[in-house]
View (cartoon, rainbow, N blue to C red):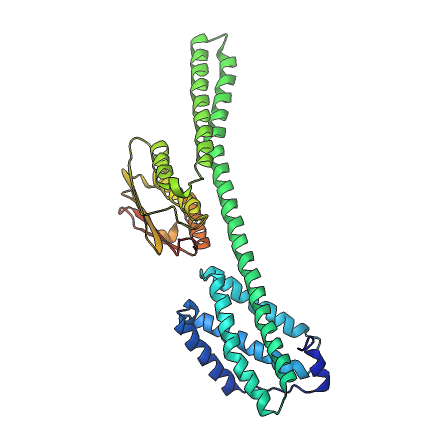
Length: 367
């Protein structure tokens, strides 16, 4: 076995060359194999372009076995391509398992191509082994770098979602509790002003301060309850959703929910993230829509979880909503669903209510 393929570089015993026609034929073979295994990459023009460049890079590395270089340019190219692939696939919701499977198929396609080329040049087993090792390392290095880019992209999304959640809580505390406390302090100061010259008016200021302090306390408790409610375990999803609706939707709004299917077998993290998104959708409807009724429907089957939050409120033009608090909430919701490899769509129009629809695929845990 060749531990160091570079030993063959110095002897000039590896001289593989791969024409454009050979590369195209290899790519067509790879595409067919991906279709045979029903890889989602096979039907994406963007993914196939990236696969072609990945394939070309692997063959380039085999070609360059006999040409010693610093490798800095090749390394830079590999890192750039891998980062592009990892980020794109994370953004498209393509699981790393699909990338790994595609890499296996690529190696199986290219190995006979490389071996046949070397045989045509009269190369022996040592050259073939060196080329195979180089090809394998080239492909898997890019897969590893792509997985790192995939993880980094998702970490940024998670960080962004958490930042948005903190900002939302800060707004609630500022607009609710802090405002009420400020009003209470103002009335306490006015009580001091009127205490001697107008005792009756001073008493009303004390009463008003007491009222708004109770409002501040209620706002703090509601925010704390919201933090507590972010945990919706698989076996308790329906109860958590029902409890949220009963405690956070005002009496003047009719709120109903329907949850069907078995949530116990869902992937870890799906329940909690889905619950947070539904909670935010309900909150938006309560605060911004003027709705008289809100309905939440959630259904899970073997392959997907589908959820909708519908209200009969004022509606809005979706394209013009991004700068408002509700619009910022929609962006955060979309990012959370994207982290689950799902899709969130918002349907609304002025005077026609709003529907937030969520689809998350492959929600079952592996056996």
